[in-house]
Amino acid sequence: MADRKCLALIAHDQKKDDLAAFAKAHEATLSGWKIVATGTTGGRVLDACPGLDVTRLKSGPLGGDQQIGALIATGDIDCLIFFVDPLTAMPHDVDVKALMRLAIVYDIPMALNRATAEQLIDFRRS
Ligand SMILES: O=C(CO)COP(=O)(O)O
Image (cartoon, rainbow, N blue to C red; front, side, top):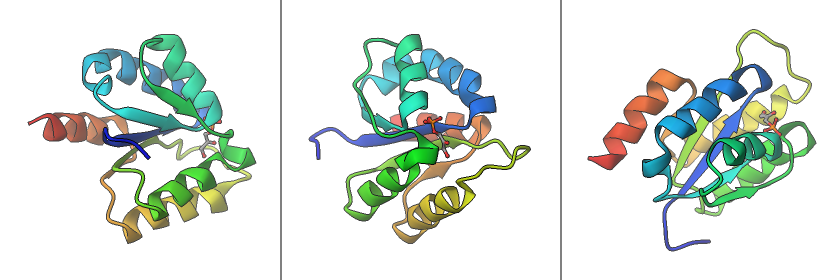
């Protein structure tokens, strides 16, 4: 898909502020990545950091998680940061599980909260 490494960014609604703040705090690092994101998340990241190279896919509940899962299966995603909301029931929970399953199957580094994402970003920089 790209010469640069590809990072997938996703956040559930209650975590989108956190992900936008995370992107802003790490804007310089993220500028070295090609980024793909689910639709609404990608819009929020671009609002916070208009200079980043973000491709927006479909919104999660409309197939965006599955699109990212398919990109993992084809070897086009190198890292996944997904700020999950564990306190809200999701109609597309099966899609979320399928995405996480593929990230595990293909051994993709995957951060599911901000603390882990901070470690992952630092680790991949060094
Ligand atoms: O629902 C999501 C992930 O499961 C995120 O999708 P959006 O970024 O489109 O809100």
